[in-house]
Structure formats: structure tokens, C-alpha cells
Length: 421
Image 1: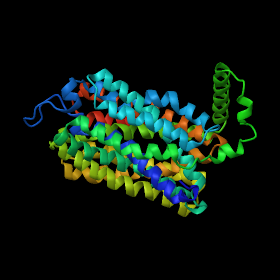
Image 2: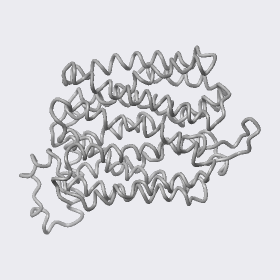
Image 3: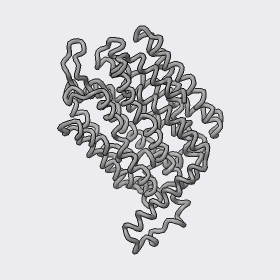
Image 4: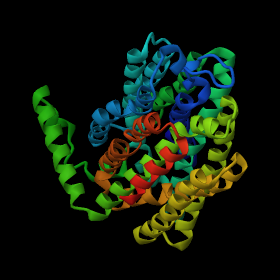
């Protein structure tokens, strides 16, 4: 394939499709159709993952966060490797692991084999999420960088919502295992493209060519290479810690991601219980709201930043205003709504405000560090927002709900604790 074929616009479209599939997987496992329930709802027998394996709410919550194990281990490794190897080739390795692990979910025989597959999913995701945004930042037109990043990140809510919908449609017709096989098959062509398509280098790597010379690796033992890699990663981590804007942005984004993670994973199930909705109907309704608010909110954040000027100061102002507005409206949605019709406006505008943070916050992460450290900076950002955000949030909310047995109170308390920080 000719390198001239891979224009910046086509690269963005390919990355958007891959990103959407990654988050479709997140939505599928959270959907009522695939996730299921062991208790009868409106006379329905136990079904889905929870019904088949008899999971508690806490165990169920860990399925949403198990990917973090693979992500934590591999994201820094892929970021460091990007100094030496083409980014698309590294993505091919990671996506191959993602395909095998998602397909493996369809053949699991119990909770722990499924949990193991979900852990490996994170390894595949790490190669993609830490390298795609720096490549987009490299190739986007200067006047539209925020808009291009927004287009990429809007695939997160759209993918999540599409996963809700697909899980609710596929599972009743073909069974919950089929959903994982279909998403693995859909990702296969993209992994092949990354393996055989043009080799792309990051701008940071080009700046670093004087320091990264493959000849210097000749005669070096495997143990010495590992030691050098660890030393390099530690040095990069110390450098990132010296950039206060980056550090504070990571901390704030972790809190924000924790709240979104709790709403995303438990939202359809909580909505079905609180407003007495059909489970598959809840998947479709929450999916539709998330798609609409995710698309509009994410693009709105990127377009606004481009219009007012793509600076870190402007990006941080947008994040602050949107976060406060979103916090108030989401807490109010569960506190004040007596019906689903009353709930939707509060919830939709609150989500829209929060999704408008996506592009500005990720732009700050890219722009607040040296070009060479952008992949590593994104890897650390991803680890921190998951480890401090949407990894503990779903099992914590599941545990809280098991104690309170009241989704309204559980959501209000969890959100209030997060945003008070």
C-alpha cells in the first residue's frame, strides 16, 4: 500500500473506527442484554453473564475494570517502544491481543476465565490509545487540531452507546457470547492494516533519532535492554512530574472519568430498576441519550476551543466550567426526577457538559509536555484516569448499591464524594 494513500483525513477515519470498536466492547459488556441479571425482572428468568455465572454486583463491577491490569502493564511499554519502532506496527501487535481476548470471552467457562480475558483486552487497548492521539496531533491542520481530537474522542461515547444497543439486540437473538465474536471479527481488518500498511513514525521519535540508534543496541543483552527501558521510563516519569499543568490535569481527569465510568456501566441497569423499564429498552434509551450527548458535547468542546483559541489556558477554562455544570445536573437527575421523562433532560444536559471536556483535557495532556514524551504522557494519563477513575468506580458503586439497595441514593452519594475532591 502506498504511503500517499494514507492521507491525514483517512488516518483520522481509521483511528475513529478502531476507537469506536474498543468502546463498543465496553458498552457491550455493560449492556443489560449481555451483562444480564440473576434476579427475575418483570417475570423474566436469569440471563446473560450475571445470570449464567451467578455473579454478585461487586464481581460484576470488576468485569468492567479488569482491562486495567493489561493496560497498566503494557501502556508504558508501548509508549517507550514508540521511540524505536513504527507506531502502526506496535498497534498491530496490541490489536492482535485485543482480538484474541475479546473472542476468548465467547468461550469462557466461568467467571475467572472471563475475568482473565477482560484483563488481556487492556493490553490490546494500551497500544492504540497511547499512540493514536499523538499521531492525530501530528497530522491535523494547525487551525483544527482540537476539532480533530474531538472527532476522535467522540467515538468513546458513540462506541459505548452503540455497545449498549448492540448488546441489547444481539444477546436476545444469538446469545451473549456471539456479541464478543462479532466485535473481534470487526477489528481484524484494522489489525491487518496496521501490520502491512505504511510505517508511521511519531514526531517525537523524529526529534529523538540522534538518541535512538538501532546500532547502539547491537551486542546488548536482553537484561541490559530491560534495564535501559526501565531507566528511560523512570526518567520520563520524573520529567512529566515537573510539569504541573500536566499533573493537575491528570488528577482532575481521573475524578471526572470515575464519575462517567459509574454512570456508563451501571446506568442502564439503574435506569431499568428506578424507572421500571424493560432491560433491553433501558439499553436503547440510555444508548440513544449517550450517543446524542456524546457526539454534540465532544464536538462542541473541540469547536469551542478552536474558536476561542487553542491554548492550554482556554482549554482549562472550558474544562472547569463544563465540569461544574455537569456535576450539578447529573446529581440532580437522580435526586429530583420522579419519572424517566423528567430524568432525561437533566441527565442529557449533564452528560453533554461532561463530554465537552474530552477534547480540551486531552489537548492539555498533549500540549503540556515535550513532543518526545507525548506517547508516554498519554500512557500515564490513561493509567491514572483508569486506576483512579473508572476502575474503582463501578465496583465501588456496585458495593454501595448492595448496601443501600437504592440506586438514587447510591448514585448521589458516589457522585458527591467524587466531585468533592
